Amino acid sequence: MREEYRFVDGKKLRCGYTTGACAAAAAKEAASLLLGGGGTGFAEIGTPAGKTLRLPIEESARSGGEASCVVRKDGGDDPDVTSGCLVRARVRKRLEQGFLIEGGEGIGKVTLPGLDQPVGEAAINSVPRRMIASAVREVCEASGYTGGLLISISIPDGEKIAAGTFNKRLGIVGGLSVLGTTGIVEPMSEAAFCGSIKSELSMLRALGHESVTLTPGNIGLDFLARHYPDLRPVKCANFIGESLSLSAEAGFSGILIAGHIGKLVKLVTGSFNTHSRYGDSRQFVFAAFAGSCGADRILTAELLRCATSEAAIALLKSAGLWEAVFAMILGETRRQLNEFLIRRSYEGLRCEVLFFSSKYGPLNMITRQWDARLQNGKGDFPQPV
Image (cartoon, rainbow, N blue to C red; front, top):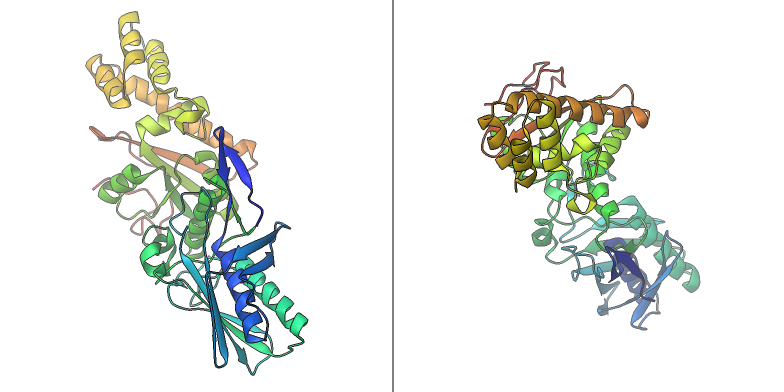
């Protein structure tokens, strides 16, 4: 294909193609071999994005009534664990009309509801399925074949590679998913990560959860596992605002955001993407609220020079101002979160926040009503264990 590029943080990065595009290209070439064509070393496929991809064929073979082809996924400059994996398609004729697409070695199976495919099906999403069917149909029409085809997609080492993905959390077991909505992989795509968040939220909602817990990263996941083991948190990275919107669109009635104070205190200033590239207001928040609570100029200056939020907390505790300052942080964070939802017309959805510190543990208790099915059959948040 003609190489495409995107500029991310000022860097020129090369685009790649999705596992869905690889599966479609491999299936097209395998079908062509089976029906008397092929052998060009490339397969051209159309994409939902309206582009034509010309993907190289790494291996091809025909034996008896079956043909197979392999395409190596090129993820471009995107740091995807699936980049470089082999996607194989095996095609053979079937008595029934139409195209039956199934998953083979290294393709995961769906075990929980709410995902793109129903429980029990191979994790080959609907857009890649349409791409595969369209590519194979083109071959059939060109060759005059009107019968049916069985198309099996496999990814050698897919189960091993899947350990580095979200699949286990989503209830996809035994291998990778075949994904892609455009056929094109955009490097370091925020949309791809948010797509994973959306899938996990959909799965939880389909399981009957009425509320959801969001946490930015592994530190939050570890904290919640220790103190609130009954929660089922969703890792949202720095995409707090996007995850709030996705939670609302999924139909949840309540959201808990739990995280280290050093990350979540940025919400006080209305920063709903908490990545440092968008600014770091942590010490300014501590200093400003401390000043409002009576801190003198010396303490305020010390807070501004603090390297970490943990250090700021220690200073405020020594000065006897921590409780007052934290009350302001908690109240303003709640206000910002709920006003964010109101501005996006999610007035019926309420949001609560739980701060913690690596040194001091949970910094506030949770008391508002929550989803009883998540909370040991109770209507309130459980107290930390």
